[in-house]
Amino acid sequence: MRQRGNTAGFFLFAFAFTFSLQLPAALARLGLLPGDPNAYLPVATFGIFGPLVAATFLTHRTQGWPGVRALFGGLVDLRVPLRWALVALFLPAALLSLGLGLLRFAGYDGAWHYLPGAPQLVVALVVSVAEETGWRGYALPRLIEKYGAFVGSCLLGALWTVWHIPMFLAVGIPLSLGLVMLLFFVGGSLFFTFLYRNAQGSLLIAVLAHIGAHLNNSHAALPADTLPLLVHTVVYAALGFASMRRSAFERTMAATAQRATA
Image (tube, rainbow, N blue to C red; front, side, top):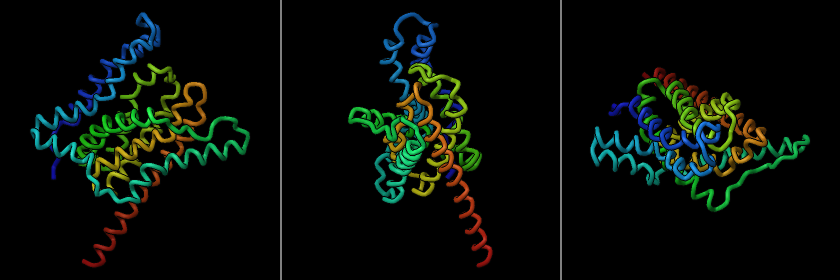
């Protein structure tokens, strides 16, 4: 079924909402606004709801409340296969710890995991729902329809990276890591798409995958230690590109089998 709604309008809305709330904290961190940067953070926190607000508004405008109910209904779709839910939640986190553990054997003296406490888990849940309702609930199906899974996911990953820039600046993460962040989010976007398609377009699987990224979050080491982020980036890039390659192979085999039986 053709997706209704304006994808460009969604991104403009989400970016405008988030940047308007988060840029003051980023500018204060850069010394371009007066005062303690931390004083701006409570307002900046609400910027995470940009994708959710944009998706909700545009869905209501084109499909009314039934469309909004269908959008949010994906958050409680419990038909997600258990194996994919476990992969989404735990595979990247386990691979990050495996990589850091191997580096410790080679002499690295940093932590081998970044497990969250209870408050961080609550934040991760809220962030995951706020972002994924927009990214995978609204934007991804329309980008796939227009550009295909690979290009659409890469485009979403690139925009996902840019959307985070004020947040990174506000907490002191340098823009010199921009290319690393780009690969991190593009790889993550490809992996999330792989999970999304294997779970029949489930928004819940995307939320679980986003929570999984926070279950072992290398960003906690920034800005002092960038090595965990580099390992985490390799994990998501490898998972993302490998999963897309597998999907392409499976489609090719299915098409070959269909031609052979025609």
